[in-house]
Every structure is written in structure tokens, then in C-alpha cells.
Length: 410
Image 1: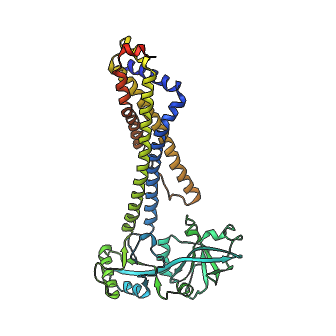
Image 2: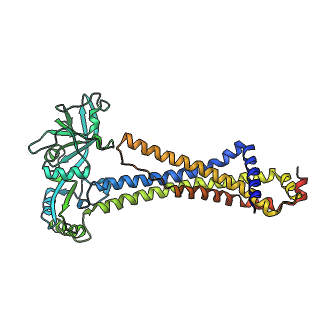
Image 3: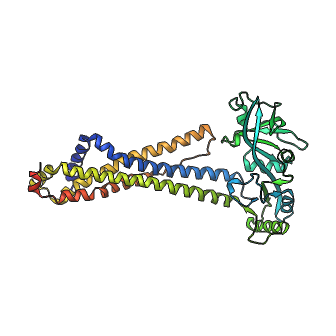
């Protein structure tokens, strides 16, 4: 096939597409939706993985997270069964290779201020400066203004940054204001810097012992964080901690009611969840793409039927079967190519829009979309190939049409 034939093909194909604009756009729609979904899901998924990796990096690579057995998503949440205690924390503290520990617990509480009651997370945190450092690093909490909780504080609280907005309670809170947590009065002593999520930015941090007084469950902890000494093997120390807790809690190996995780294991857990969600969504996008392919096939069959006389004329003036075949294959491939190109542009724009929203609405450099232009080119070309394959049967039918019968077709 020489270059002149290709130019002629493209001219004929383009004329056909532009002469049936409404049908062409409807045919493109399925491909556009499918490709848009695949591209946006891929980019948003990679952005979420980048954000997750960045957040887990703040935990450090030398920290163990000990929690009641269950989901990593609920670590630290007050539970009614198999809770950890201060005694467990002391046992972990005594393990060789552990330099220090910190514990906390949280649950939902009623927050009342200015005659308005809302329900947000209440954290019970240790006031020890070293424990506070370890907890602050893991949770990314840094004081904005006011002060942090200190030894001797009782009914004092540090609030998330959203409490500085009048939207929550009709009036912004400030240092020195009083409010109620489950009916107990607390004084505001400080505010955390913005974290980037409404859940974190609406937390109430109170002293651990005061938390037990408000909620009960004396000495109960939801999560123990253990900092591993420099030079110690994380896995070896983790096994020592597990052995110590099994002994103190009277448990057999394999029947633990607690779990110990490293930052790498936490990352793997979250990545597995993201992978499952992404696989389901990509499957849905694949169905949309399949529907788009069926649309191309249907349009091409209709085009063959409507252009029967044209096919007869082309054959009468010497067009060969292969040339007719290529003519219709070009047309269906162009549907896929244009649909893929539009879908890629929309998908990238959507992902970049989310990145922009995170940049100015949540936190800078948290959600970063890495666009691989090689991947996008492959998707566009693959979409064109997919369109050509979907148009093969109609093109084959056109190529096999009888010239005389086609000329007589009404």
C-alpha cells in the first residue's frame, strides 16, 4: 500500500465521518467514556499511592505499631474486646531493642459549644514530651498556636484547625474558650496545624487519664507505638515484642489477639485495598470500552449497508477487495483513535483537577499525578487498534460484496 492510497483513504474516511456528525459522535462516546475512565483511574490510583507513600514516610522506618487484632484502618479506635493496656505498654518498653513507646486511644464523642452539639473524634494522648514527639511524628500533628498538652493538665484540650472556623458551631473557638466533651468541661489551650482531612482537622486531643475518666476503660489503649533502637533489626525486635506480649497475656503462638505492623506492612495493606478497588473500577471501565466497541461495529455495519452502491462503484472502477477492506478498517480505526485521544485528554484533565484540588484545598505535594506520556500514546494507539478490530467484520463484509449486485442495490 503506497502513500497516495493512504492519503486517498484518509480523505474518504474523514468525509464520511464529518458527513454523519451526530452518528459519529454517538459512536465515539462509548470509546471516550471507557478510555477516560481507564486513564483517570490509573492516574488517580498512582496519585493515591504517592500520597500514601508520603504519609507513611512520616511514620519513619523504625517504628512498630501494636494494636488489637483487626483492620489496620481501625488502629487506635476504642474497642470492647481484646484492648491493649498500660501494662502491655510497659511490657513492650522492657523489650530489648525498644528505645521508647507511646500509647493513645480515640473514639467518637459529643462536642458541645455555643449551644451546638456535633460528634467528632476525641483522642486520649500521653503528655510526656518524648511520647508526644513520637505520636506527633506518626500522626503529623504539629502545634499551630497556643501550646501542647503537658504533665499536670487535666481538663485541657488541643483542637484541630477546623474549630477556628465559625462554620462548625456558629462561632470560632479560641485559646481560653471552654466547651463540653460528653458533658465534661474542657479549656482550649492550643490548635494543631492543618492536616488536610476534615476527620483529622476536627479532632479533640485531651490527656490520656482524663480520657479514661470521660469514657471509662481505665488503663485501656487503642494503639501502642514502639520506636526501635538504631541498628536493631525491625523484624527481630517485632518478634521479641510479640513473644513478650504472648507471655504476659497468656496466649499461644498463632492465637494472638493483637497485631504488630511495620510501616512497610501498613503500606502493603493499604496498597492491597487500593489494588482491589482499582481492579473493580477498571473492570467497569472495560465494560464501557466493550460497549464502545460494539457501537463501532454497529455503526460500521450500518455504513456498509448505506454505502452498498458506493462499494459497487469502487469495485466497478477497479478497486480490489483488499482496498475496500482497508477503507473500512481505516474508518473504524479512526473512530477508536479519535475516541482514545479525547478520552486521554479528559482523563488527564480530571486527574490533574484532583491534584489541583489537593494542592490548594488539602496539602501541597501530597497528591501528585505522574503522567507517563509513553503510556498515553500506547493507550491512544491501542484504542485505534481496538477500533480497527471492532470494524473488521463489517469491513470484510464490504470487501466481499458483489460489484453487480451492489450497483443494483436501492
